[in-house]
Image (cartoon, rainbow over all chains, first blue to last red; front, side):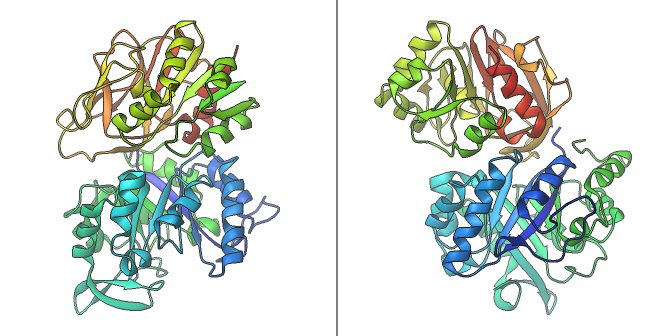
Length: 252
Length: 202
């Protein structure tokens, strides 16, 4: 059977990985290529690259880096950040991305998911959603989680899948950065309404959080995190060994 | 020289990079004489079966692939490229394939438990069904990366590995010089590179 995936996420700005990285044994801890190689060699099932730059020149640098990563890292690569048109899909797919993640771009361009899915297939389109509870309801936030769009998150996700999103990343703003575990309640609500892979993001602080995620939500497909991996607080291979000891199927 | 057949579908960057990474000379081409001159051919593919088959036929590449394969040249189909090697596909209708292998392409939907997600996306393990040169550097149980909604059936003549997604699903095939992988070796880490290495060996 298919394994649960563990996915590190790398935020890239000006050609460097940001969000402080602290690894022993790496010469250049903020080189996207070195980090990608390290993760690929140490059990990551997939890599996510977020382009957090704004200018055209920096975007060009991002795609150069992506191409360099894709020329020597042979696991699935997902790219997000600044994707608002089908041309943006084209730009990163040509550089070796396998999947493209859309977030705010799907809000500003309502036909983006459908257009991209028609051209590249559903498996290529990942809908990433930043969700926060407002008065007890799940709401979609845009602009990196700063702005409440007032869109109902569950409706939005359901609609996204109908338009052709082949995978959903649910990032809980409520648990993000708190390191007290994934947002099980929010993820359960999403799993109940869609039948495409769902990736949990936001809240991982320790190995137990991943065990809880996969034990409490058997149909969740993957756990995504950034800083706990970058800071070496959790080593992916060790995490996967522990998951296996807990009867959770992983690729070792 | 390995020719990656370029017929206008899909992203060939990772595939060509992976072959270069293991030290092979690669040409990505849709030109018939270059395909004919190559030592081996790789047929990639993503998207819909009928679109891909139409492009192969209209460009004349289908004929050159069949001619070269029948002359004994090694060919490996990957993902949709593997499916194209078979006789027929039932993806949105009924479409003829290259017929280099016996068998048909049918949907996972209706075959596997309906609670399971389709496409079958992710890392799944290989169960060997027959010996093959492709497995020279890998072990049974190794994980490879799948993304697909259709699978090859009635292919007992060529199946060399299966994977389990509730039920057995064809993962790799070989009959003489005709090879195919349903999964993506170019996205399957060291295991995938080792499969490509075995295929490329003279």
